[in-house]
Length: 240
Image (cartoon, rainbow, N blue to C red; front, top):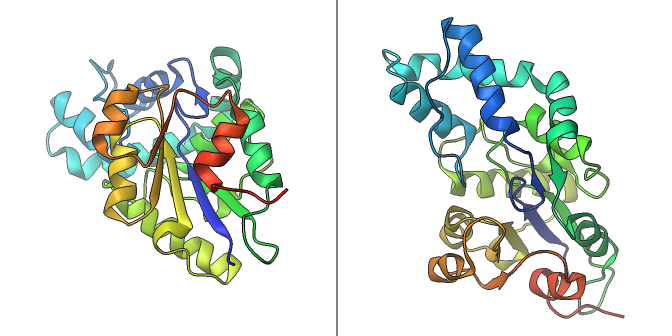
């Protein structure tokens, strides 16, 4: 039996960053355009590439598409200082650290030494993703090199394909279909999984359980506090 690729969303699935993302968008906007950002576009379940384009359009920036690369580069540059902001304002969600550790330690059902390979599928650009997870002590069990990040594409389903390709190169295995599990708190996370044939686990710490179920999640959890339920949802039956 092969390994399983487990892709975690970050915001409102593993952590609450305490509004840090909105803050950093304001910092980058002010640096680029010299005045305050009037507001940030909806973020839930979206990638930074999509959010930036929408935010600039809403702010009245002329030809917003030509500024996306510079804005994303600005977000990247904020990574080192962003960690301290998240450490001050944010917190890991209940059960997140235990869930990551339990999945890392579990053996999959069936013959052989198959395990779960864990990474992230996130709307954040990588420096901000690493800052958030590092500030809150959640990097230990994640292979961040195979993850897919928010500057890679506007459409979240494309991140699933990217993460699979990264994992295939790193682990020498095809993670097509149900060999990939996407875990997130929004209907867009669920939609990305469904569009790419992956399994989806919805966590109702962002959208409601009803919204996640309606989107077609294979399993919906109220949160990550019941580690045994998390393992069952992600891995199915595990070996003792």
